[in-house]
Length: 137
Length: 359
Image 1: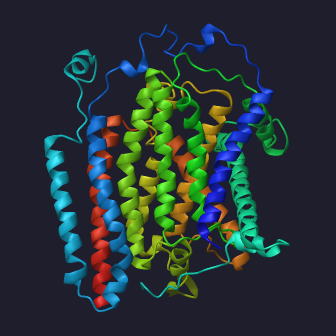
Image 2: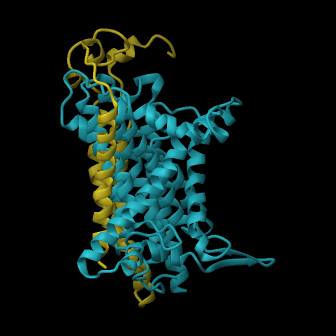
Image 3: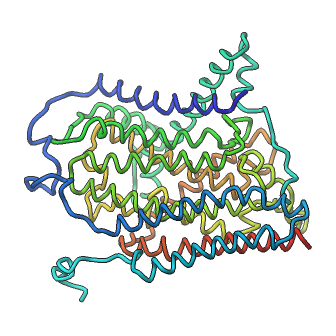
C-alpha cells in the first residue's frame, strides 16, 4: 500500500477530530456576547490602540533571517548523512566523503561567527528600555 | 554499521486492517488507512486525556507536596470526564478586532501538526501507520507546522501579549529546531536511512554484553552526548520549562493563547500535549530503540507508551524544578550554545563513524 494514503488519512483525522470537537462545543456552549467580555485583555485596563501597531524588538527579525540560512544548510546535510555510511563502505575515502562537508560546515561556522560578532544573536534593548530599568543596574 | 539494514515493507497497521476487510482494491486501502488513522489518533487522545487534566496536576502536586484532584472517582480519574464537559461547554469569547478566519485556523493547526507527525512513528505491536523512506524528515516537518499556527494565533488575536507571545514562540521554535534536527540526523550517520522502522531495526543489535546483561545498541548508549542535546532541544521545541518563554505567565499573561477560550483553549492544549508526546516519540525512536524492550515483541506498544510518558514526566519535572530563562538568555543559549554543540556533535560523529568504517 502506498504509505502516503495512510499519512493522508491521518491528516484527515487531524482536521476532522478538532472540527468534531468544535461542533460538539458549539452545541453545548452558551452565547451571551457583551462588550466587556470581548474587549482584549490588557491586565484589566481599557485596551489602547491595536496590537499589530506596536513596536517590537528587531532581534526577532534577525534570528528569523539567521534561521533561513541554517535551515537551508540543514536540508543540505540531510542527504549527506544518508549516503555517508554506504559511500564509505563502497570504498570511498574520507577525503572524498567527509572533507567537503567539513568545508561546508566550516563556511557556515565562519558565517555564524560573523553574525555573532555583528551582534545578530545578542539580545539588544532600546535606550529607552535601558533608561526605564529601575533595578539591577 | 550502515547500509546493512534492509528497508522493511508491509506489516503496517493499514495493511493489517486491509487484510481483514471483505473487499479489496483502492477502496480497501483508503478505508483501512482511515480506520488505522482513527485508531492512532484516539490512542493519542486517550494519552492526552490522562496527561492533561489528571497526570499533570497529580505530578505537579507530588513535586510540590500538595494534594491534587482526588475527589471524583478512583484516584480522581473521573475529573477527566468532568473537565472535558466543563471545557467544551464554556462560552467562546471572540476578542474585538480578531482577524478571522486566521484566529480560528491557528488552534486547528496545532493538534493537526502534532497528530500528523505520528503517522510515521513506529509504536510497536504492528502499530505504525506509514513507513515512507523520508520518515524522519517527515516527522520533523510535520511537527514544525505548529509554528505557523502559533504566529497566526499571536497575530490574529489583536492582543499585545498574544503578538509578543507569538513572536517569542516562533523565535524559540526556530532557534532550537536546527540543533534538534542536526542532532537527530547525527543518528542517521549510523543508520544510513531516514526510514523510521529501519532506524528502530538498527538499534536491535547488542552493543556490549556485561555479566549476562545485554545492552542493546540504542543510540542513547552509543552517543549519550547527542541524546542529551536532543532532549534539551526537544524540551525547548515543545516550549516547556525552563524554555517556556512563549507563554511565560509572569511576563506576558499567557502568550499567544491569551484570547482563547472554550473549545479553542482545549484544542491548543490538546495540540501542546500531543506535541510533547511527539517529541518523546521522536526521541524514543531515534535514541531509545523505539518500541524495543524486554519481553515479547507484542509488548512493544507498552514500552513505547512508557518511553513517551517518561519524556512527559521529564517535562513536568523540569516545570516544577527549574526556573524559566530570560528571553535574551534563551536566544543566546540556542544560537551560541546549542547550535555550536550540535554541529560539533555532527562533525565528531561523522569523523568517528568514518574512522571506524575505514579502518
